[in-house]
Amino acid sequence: MEQDANRIATYIRSEVDAKRRKFSDFLILTRKKHKRIVPYARALEALNIPIEVSGAGAFGQSEEVEALTVLLRALSDPQDPLALVAVLRGPLFGISDPELFAYKQCGGWFSIFASGDEATSADDSKPDSSPAASGGLAAASGGFPSTSGGLRLQAEDSDLVTGSRPAVRVTAALTALRQYYRWTRLLPAAAALDRILDHTGYLALAATTPGGVEAGDVLHAVDRVRQVVEEGSSLAGAADALEADSEERNEVESLPLEPGRTDVVRVMNLHKAKGLEANVVFLADPTGGFAPRVDVHIERRDLKAQGWFQVIRKSEDSFATTLLGQDADWEAHKAAELPYLEAEQDRLLYVAATRARELLVVSRFTGNQKSPAWGVLNDFLASAKELPIPTSATAPSVKALDCSTKAQTDSDGARLAAHEQVEAPSWSVTSVTAEAHHIARMTRAADATADDPTKVVSPGTPSHRADAGMAWGTLIHGLLEHAMRHKSATREDLRRLAMWMTVEEPRLRTVIDEALDTVERVGSADFWQVARDHSRSVESPFFVSESGRLTNGVIDLMFQGDGGWQVIDYKTDVALANKYADQLNAYRAALRKVGCEVADASVVSVRAQK
Image (cartoon, rainbow, N blue to C red; front, top):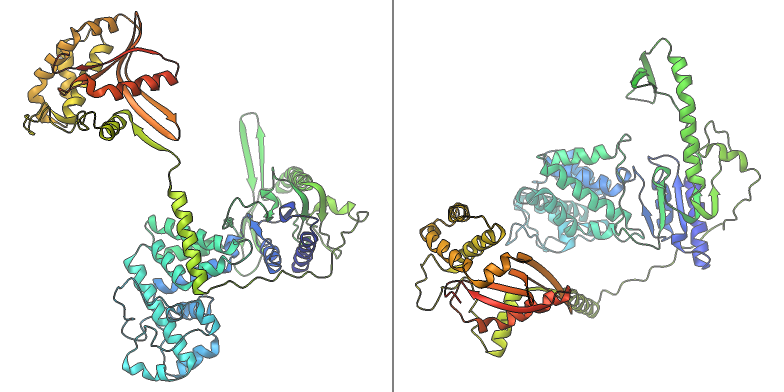
């Protein structure tokens, strides 16, 4: 399988370097779902080929996910020396066995609390920001400095500080792990894990691969931890969940770091390929075949279904199974089910062979094989033309990043400029009332607070009056709406409605009679009678767009009189009608946009009876 993966990666690299193909022209399919994708992803990444892996089972085989699982084990049980040593030896710290042995020989103790007092820090949630002091990825390159980098050890551990460099590296790593342990006790599990990944730089390292598959797996694992913990589990339970995802029976997908990228080589198992196409399709992994195995037979006759299956016991040490029981006619049932399984295999092969637009490449195994991966397609490969593949391909060199102070300053400036550009709104939302107030303030032609429902009726009105403010206006508008919609509504009907409308404003119940009197006065107006006898619309909301601005509002009453559409806007204050000319003009403009010409627009002051 590794040889097949290397040959395919070499061919793709050479085709792209020669500018005959693009990365997006290639699709690699494997036959099985589990453990068969990872070697191809690694071979492509070795040649700096950007990839997108979407096959089931790849997530569970991720080394990054395995490292996080081990870390969760150690943090969930700080007294477990085996889990702790596994973390120290893993990619987060990269400490070798000789270094661990030297630490033990110096009298070291494999525990998160080995060095006594915890790292000095003004804030318990913020350790020294130096990656070296943190015991992060710098450990892999020998980057741990002396303990002056923000770490404090007890006096009895001075022999570890002044002793060999490996002992200092292990001690610094344990100090970092102790801080990580504190984070998991102070923060939600996923937040603590995010901070650990940021502090160690492990996520940044995973994101340096061409396809970012490893970083995608890390982020997926963090989400998985968050999900498990939110359901009430612990860090140990989260580690169990990640470990379960790696088992063969689970098919958790590996997600790309940047989904939606176009110029990438897609790698997936055959079951994910339905509906997809590519110019060049590789049917890879020639040794990944298997023979159809009958484990159940379902027979459907009319509306009745009946099934048979074997009862077996699987061995914990091997793939061997022990038959415990089966139907007396099991061989007949097996023979009846086998054609359906063979037909399913043919269907999958048809899907595989029809994914290619221009070129279909089938990997072939020339040795003895009981179940070829690509089934009956192998019978036609003897006469097929062999694809010429170069003996080797060279990955393009990666240009070293400029990490100078000037480059960082320029990068920060570019990031801030891009952020400000994105923050600038391309559109805005406003209301007709707010816009009218804005125009009034700009022109000083009207009192900007005239229609503010949070204000009192007039400067002389005490602020504690019930018949003032937003709640009073809402009550009046609601009663007028109901009265216009229902001609038969009586005063008692409106009173019951008012009682419901004032459930959360009991102080208004003292002025319900005044509100009903107000509605009756409005109901005796000439415009009211005309509106009732013609087509009308009550409390009509609208949204209009113009020059990147969305303007919304609600028209209290509009009706089609003899001269055209009339617009009425109720006001519960005592302001003059000319104060609202801009608001009425906005209503006219909004209706005109939907093809409704307004003949007249008026403000009705329900309190002043004007």
